[in-house]
Length: 109
Image (cartoon, rainbow, N blue to C red; front, top):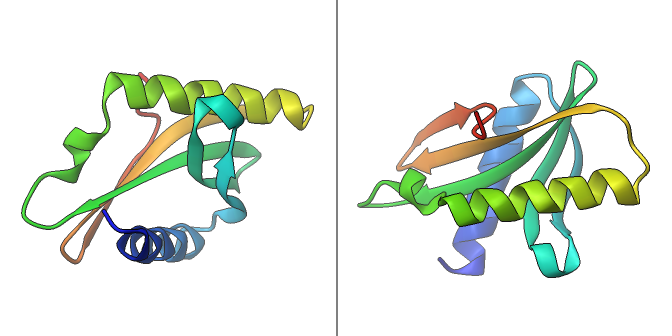
């Protein structure tokens, strides 16, 4: 996916989260060797590390592989340690297909 399409999808995801009472903490956090977290948000004193996937003509959810989830978990742990945070957190995904948005909370269960 091109960076422009990725930014467009992330902007839609941020709008969705804001409409659902999430505070956006950070976007595109790079955790060195671990990878990137698209969106870090907070709601009800819980941090949400959100992976955004979009697609047209295919099911974007299939791009969230076990390897990708492992990188997100490692990045989230790096973020928490680096910021010296002791909060509950979860790994979520927002899937954008055509004009539909699906929020998948706590995808590591």
